[in-house]
Length: 386
Image (cartoon, rainbow, N blue to C red; front, top):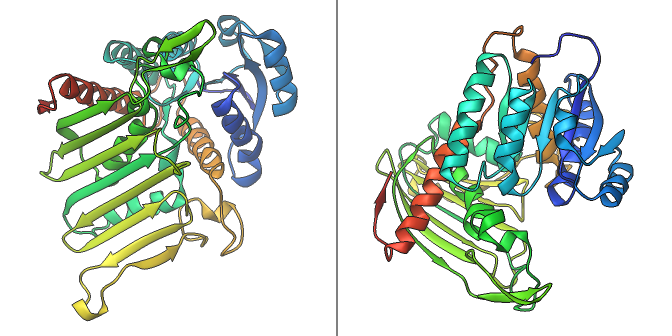
């Protein structure tokens, strides 16, 4: 429930690997950059005692623990940050919400729609009590993409007719790369589709302000077996995915995601095409947004680079002087800022919480899109209506 004392908000983070490192950085830096309630990094939780102890020291947490259930019951914990594999999200998030905590859960919300629906029910009850149930689609907090959203909202693109998002990586190109939890359906839910495809689809829906009404999709597992602890193991998720989305306005969007795209390290590109303008973004140049104003005379038209480092740009008032670029990690600090401001804006206990977007309901809607793409692939690419 909302904090009532003047002490710093106590944060517990469950998970300490890749996302745990990124979230730890955010909790360390957010109050130094922004005018937000103070936070205390109370405890970091993991199943391996020695590994989580080392992570607590390296990532600067006050304590470490191996029992998340005990941690979420503590009175000095206000926010539970879930940075675990997807198969653990539902159990932890529901328990934390029922314990009266604000929750930040990494994307995708869950491994399947049934889990996501249960999480939404818990979130709705918690929100009515004054708790935040936030979903971590961090790229919404990249300043250039936040500016793109503003351009769409104020009508600089006119009516959006089509969109294209690709998210390509190459960390699985080597067929000898070992098995991990990300390659097993029971722990990851899906492969590239859920892992990075969820980001791509969220950007389409968030930037356009539209929802998906129908999909056609194809999945591919390009390396069907990988070395495991006891020999070769079968990969049970996709390595790459392609989809066409029909949006509720009639616009069409294409999605391509892969963890097998040789030479692509973390290559997220976004293209939006409207009746009066167009936008392009490339995460490998994260401080740049390219805009074409189609209302100009044709002889003057062309994509113009907007260097998103001015104090007038989203989130930039808190960071560095003009021209001093931000990195990937700053989006996590921006996300923590928005969460803390939502907590601060929440009224007294028993009143509905302030809105944080995306929330668990957004995660459920996206989970349904992911499962529709999987169903379309199973039906040989047939259209699946949502």
